[in-house]
Length: 218
Image 1: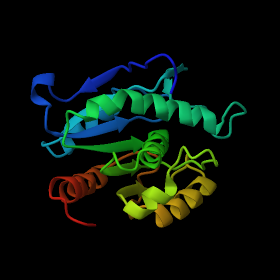
Image 2 (image 1 turned 30 degrees about the vertical axis):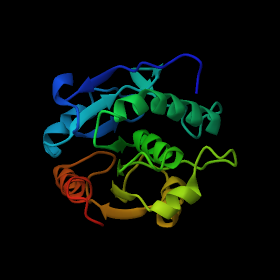
Image 3 (image 1 turned 135 degrees about the vertical axis):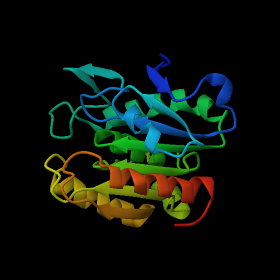
Image 4 (image 1 turned 120 degrees about the vertical axis):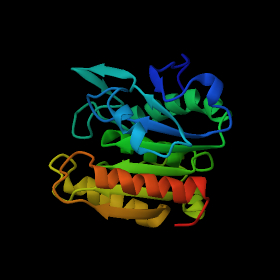
């Protein structure tokens, strides 16, 4: 955790007076986007959730990023760890006000969501990953994979096989990691490319209702 407390720019779906005791869903946007991007999905999510969309910490180009792209020279797992640790430092006290914490990440946001799950497996009820990936870890113990594998947290992973952005190696790694460590529900969508569509969001609504609100197994 950094010495300076990160206080991210966020958007909430409901006022503070109406949040206590509700299930929380944290939206994590993709590369070069911002916190406004995914809030358009809020009307397609179960009403019971309090939704909060978080802006990534690093300004870049027209938007923000959580860490450098994996193919960039300045990418490192340390950069991922710092971003995730800062996010958790902000989220941990917030989470105490809610009945559960779920994460929804798009593209790079899915990498952040899965990384936070791997860092704090006891704290996260489920992860929704949309057109994204998971990142390889290191031997620092930041990712508690054995603990997560024992829990088998339910995860939804939606994507298009023709996604032009997420490379094959990232998909292969994510598939192998998810199969071993979480209880993954994988759904493929045609003609969606690197985006989200209404059919996928209907499935996300159903998944969140089933897994979090009803507490059913997947």
